[in-house]
Amino acid sequence: AQKITQTQPGMFVQEKEAVTLDCTYDTSDQSYGLFWYKQPSSGEMIFLIYQGSYDEQNATEGRYSLNFQKARKSANLVISASQLGDSAMYFCAMRETSSNTGKLIFGQGTTLQVKP
Amino acid sequence: NAGVTQTPKFRVLKTGQSMTLLCAQDMNHEYMYWYRQDPGMGLRLIHYSVGEGTTAKGEVPDGYNVSRLKKQNFLLGLESAAPSQTSVYFCASSYADRSTDTQYFGPGTRLTVL
Image (cartoon, rainbow over all chains, first blue to last red; front, side, top):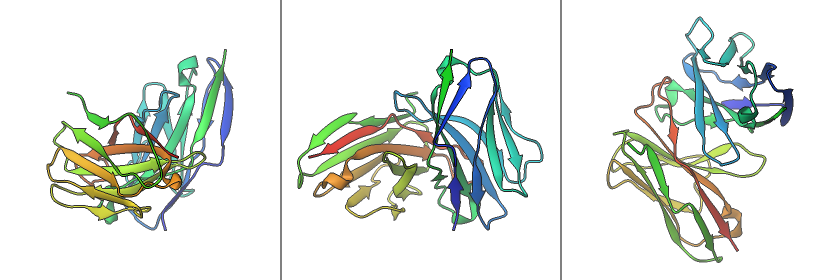
């Protein structure tokens, strides 16, 4: 069965430094998508970045990049030049194309705190 | 363009009471979803809909019912609320079910059942 694992319940990073949030996944599908969402203390879910299973290059969106290692089934989020506003919970999620439902499977999340 | 909206934002119920959560989207999305978020856990899918008039069960459907009478609206009902249903509820929508289709989330409804 498909599963997303985020092994870091909490992380600290110094402002302006880079940080990597880990995500591993399990699926038997060949076609799938991987997503990262940010949930600040206000509670909303904000889409950050997407990586397709057939994409050869790692996805990037501004300060966010996704380190996709397909053979290891990992999709780590890298945040460069951390800012205080990056303090939030981050969720990794996966969608399998074969399910025809579009549903996402979420990891348990990682809480990131950026120190000034 | 409001995206995905949810009403109400907060609600307190007594055990056994019923209520309906409303989700609305103005992006002409076919697919809509209801998730719940509990402390220490990621979001879990309750029910979903792949189009107007359709609904299907997700991972944790017990105690909930849904309806999708209009394409833009997806209602989540609690027939007889229980303390175990205390949670934050999120609605989401996406254009289709392709792996590239991003799900957009509403702001959430915080429900407490006493």
